[in-house]
Length: 167
Image 1: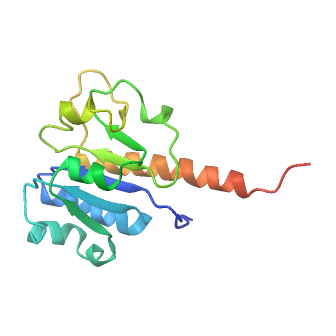
Image 2: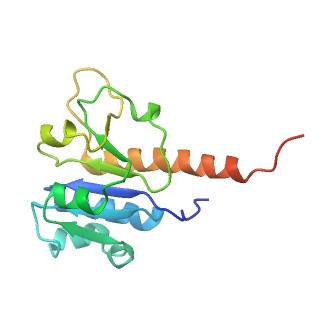
């Protein structure tokens, strides 16, 4: 069973373009306790019926914060540990060591994270391993893979910290 985290993970979508993907991520946040952050420009209105339909049952249970720019988001969380997900990063997410409160940052379905974000020093680039000569995974699939790997590590770490010492 998944336990709520005292310091939840933050799932950050930078310029998402497809409403059902964002709705699916909102649903993921609702069932995992992750926080959802959206960074404009968005390719849709938050009131978009497709967005609400994809996460309709859960939208009211999702902590949602909207930022006008990536810089505004970074300014509010200057000390956050950020993992920048990109199909072009060289380090696998399985090499990352996630901690409670980490921010998992994903780019738009069209462009991914822009070079200024990837190279701007605001986080550590990671990738989800794929077969060669494949372009990318769907955004909401990528967020799900990243979130559950981070949750797995954090839950295992919490369990290890709470386990009684072995004799």
